Length: 293
Image (cartoon, rainbow, N blue to C red; front, side, top):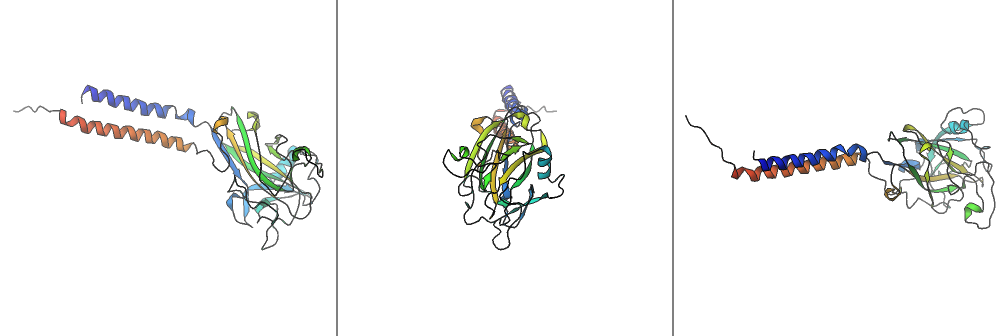
């Protein structure tokens, strides 16, 4: 093998190896997308989302939520008037937005579905939902959440403040905020109306709100105020160690870290292809000397 070919081979191999070597640093970021209903059909059970309710319409669910209340939403410690279980997918009521334009895989859910064939959340109640999720990063340096939703009637408390300052009724609630991560309340933008439109909010969140591993919970508080129907549809996109410019909405989640491994494999295959071409081109110029006798 000639020296020029040897240098080319070693250079290509070094580049491929370098791409693989930096890979662990590249995969330490992810976006977790959490859809209510998981694209299921009405009357199906969404086993990823559990709930706690007292089955009472109009009224707030609870005084300010405690750690015990969040555990009830997970299905732990329910007793007496508490009702706990897994959320059910419901068909949209005629007054509701049918789906979320920016979260096509999200579905309407309620703690119970109405009687067939409507399944439109006719058992109205204030409900606290719990959605468990995994954070694959061992180290969390930064995090953010983006969320699309519609809800009957309110996400947490409804006031004129979270209704863009306009006039209207005021429904006070001890739990003003409608979204929590591991029991930590998000900002006031994660509260308010309603069910006829898609709503959106985003914010950076403290890295301390999250835990490496599977012990993470998104809580969504559905406040009933009308005693007719209730339900929620949402998609939360939680970015971990992702720059703000790299975040993606629920409609287009960030590729899984495994795709980066695929890129490394492709670069190695490309190097192998180049190597094969160089071997082929080098053969005509190489002459072997055979010793006779």
